[in-house]
Amino acid sequence: MLWGGIVNISRAVPTYLEGIAEPGKKLSYEQKRDIIQRHVAYIRLVVHQLRREQVPGTAGRYLKADEMHLMERPNPAVGLLSVQAQAINKLYKDGLIDSYARVHMLRITGTCLDLQGACERIKTTPFPPTYFLFLRFVLACFLLILPFQMFNNYGLPGAIASILIGTAYLTMEKFGVDLADPFEGHMNDCAMLAICDTIQKDLLGPDIPVERHELSSDICVM
Image (cartoon, rainbow, N blue to C red; front, side):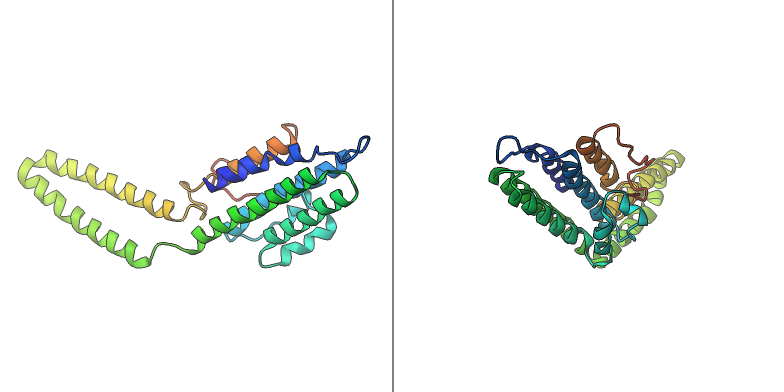
């Protein structure tokens, strides 16, 4: 739901950039692209931070040279949102967007900050280790007793069935561990990379190449 919210709010960025303060004034292609590429860089930075990965040097593909120093901050994504807000305010002061567009663009940055904070709370508030230990202890006891009980009641077919049942329970337990931390980069995690690519296509157009990922958990290259 959080990443779906990021997709929906991101699609509104190009729309509000069309706000014009005075007849005859409009944003240039470079000014629009500057705002949009910074937003694309932001969502990809959030992925790296949630997965606690080092920000790649290819971040410069979306950022200006004077913005690269933000990568040294503890939370570069938040710093990038601050730069985005300053750029929006400058467009308003220059008379290129009206107050309606300015308010809604700043609201987008605020919403992104809220969604990022919610994702970080999920990341930094994992299930207690005792929960997983107790769950695995109960599961191990059950799977040790099950084959004997099934064999006594049904013979060899019962023992084979117990193996299949045990495999299903172990698989479910593995899914549960992955889903408890959806931003870790496992096979069953939140498909953040695919969502990043979707946002990039929506904002920059289908002609802009995106990274190809076999799995959503592959390392996200900016």
